[in-house]
Image 1 (cartoon, rainbow, N blue to C red):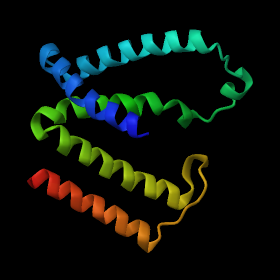
Image 2 (cartoon, rainbow, N blue to C red):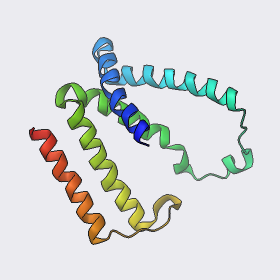
Image 3 (cartoon, one colour):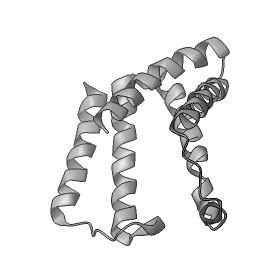
Length: 138
């Protein structure tokens, strides 16, 4: 996950460059997803793992929204990075992720195990928010 985080930080200015050249963060996201789709097609061909179609058909409707969330992330990051800087953009991203993750864990949403927000977890979330302020002001 640390490497994935590093890639997310690198993806942000890369997509911002695309957005500038293409004059739209939406167009940049489209190119980003097209390249990502090509990479995933190759990876799927290499690993040769076939889906269990009965399980796929049984999925709830919200299981198909991951790509939409990803598209929103890429557009928002490509838009925000030139305006806020990469560090502030990613810090805000992490703060939003942690707040949403804590809320999802607290109620056990989307099939995840319930993990209540404890005072220690809340303190951690508040420290991340303090980090957002420090990075943004610095």
